Image (cartoon, rainbow, N blue to C red):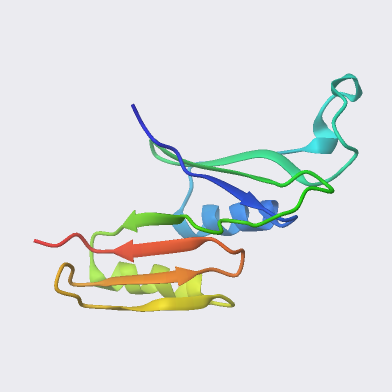
Length: 134
């Protein structure tokens, strides 16, 4: 059994998922908009994303926009944890995620990791980037 993060956005899901795909080197990207659904489905006539996913090998990250007219509170209380192999790679990912975002905890050595940090990116997603401790 697996748990797959599903992120919700307020109109910028496609931009966010493309950014994550590029940043993490996704092997597959799928983005479907409400306007892609057949008219018989009764979906709102909107270019907002109704479903998306990126694949990183066997791992998946999913997301969508809130439907038009629905109050949006993207990723209000959830973080995506992403372990990395080394401090240099972790710092590089962290720095890219922090561009236009807000650092919650700077990427640095801690008692439990040689490199760990927390950041809320410009799309509202909270990330925890860390090197596993020994």
